Image 1: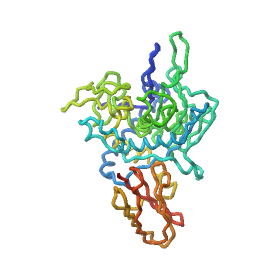
Image 2: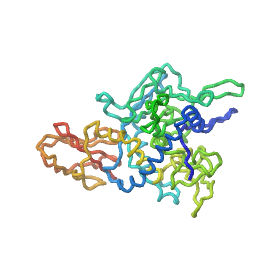
Image 3: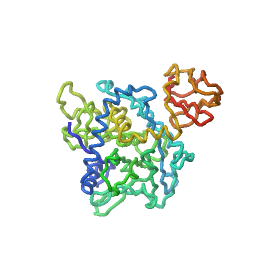
Image 4: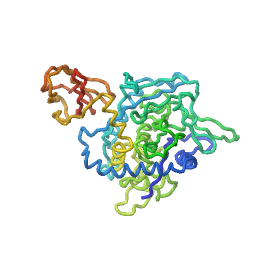
Length: 448
């Protein structure tokens, strides 16, 4: 399979009008970066290939045990000029829930996965939570709100260039938090610059829905490459496509909160499933278990087979994959190969992101904590040896990082039964927090 170098992804909503809209700006952005930096293509490829090298070992060694779930701390930068752009916390929290649902393959529409692909679909063992500690060590909600004088941020510029102005406080945006420790997500009004039928430039709304950099700007970048510096790393989302409870109007095919799922895939190293070729089966996303596709499926749910496979059986295009451009009403899966790659990225190019998710609270994943049954429906039994007599708190946190249950104990040997029957179906983190500020952590799954 050929490898296509993805520089970063732009989701575009195609509006019916006389002016032809570019379906995706990925190729233009790639060309711009490769024109500016001769080393850029090699850097992205190296990051991709290193992650692939670790992918199979990741699946073998992790075994997808509860303690191998990677947690990513998220900070939202909400940039708003008018009130409707200043999204409520409930919308941002819902977006986190959707990311965790889809990355955990707990979405109800998994039943729509084609039979041929059901054995290839997989949960990612990656979850997202709002940051609770900022770079200075202070408490935070994980949401920054910045009122800007910008009436939108134009992403594409004349000459095939692009702008990341939303990522700079000096340009009306918001500076990133340390992106080796946080996933920065900028939520703003993105605009697409076009030339209309009169030859005049216009800035159009609701066309560029999101973009994200893959892990190219990591230690493998060439020295002194400050123009494309690490503070650009992260995701950008058009404010109208965040969450599925967003009151701002968009077509139903774009209202499922899955633009963020797609962009998070890019952030973790995934490419578009059709390899970004144009009517070319030779282009590939570099993943072995995603069938070749001649082109993207633009906002449709059609079941097509656009490429002949080199070996039997012949498979349809994987239009239900989150990395296609299919309607959000149809996408419902990552493949095992994609999951292996993303976990490989978490072990290599984004390993500081994961380790910070633990060290921010001095947490230790302790294999001696015994939780059973796990998964659990009603009563969770917790056994743990603190190795000292000390007062501590047993606390359960949901995927948003919110404490949903707590109990104080004062024993060295913890032997507690927790009634979790009322908790919704989900992944949870249980922490034993001692009075001397030691934190021991494990995870469990709540079933119906």
